Image 1 (cartoon, one colour):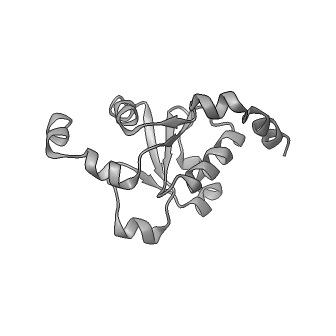
Image 2 (tube, rainbow, N blue to C red; image 1 turned 90 degrees about the horizontal axis):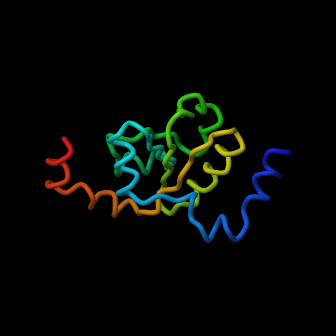
Image 3 (tube, one colour; image 1 turned 90 degrees about the vertical axis):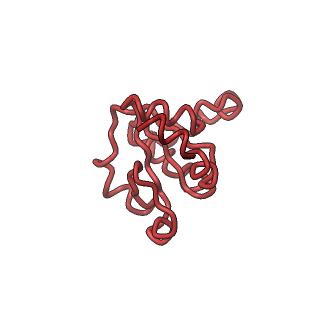
Length: 125
């Protein structure tokens, strides 16, 4: 609980105002292409059945504790869900578990789908 207490003390105006805990899709994809980041989709299995993304690792929020070893500590971990609520919960959990570079994706699922237009895919294949 002490680690959580320490983390809570970091959540001040500078933290929220600076937005260092967030990342946009363009920057996230740049890090991903460079092999410096991994995406973790924390949505439910049912949500992923409707819309899935081939380049992400899917770990539903309730499975994070038992699957923590699947998340690399040597890369930027980019979390996303439908509305960022679950991603924020997982962000806090990972930070308490000593993950250093964790980000919450600011873009929506619709933004993500729209990002992968033919020109982008062709340029980055």
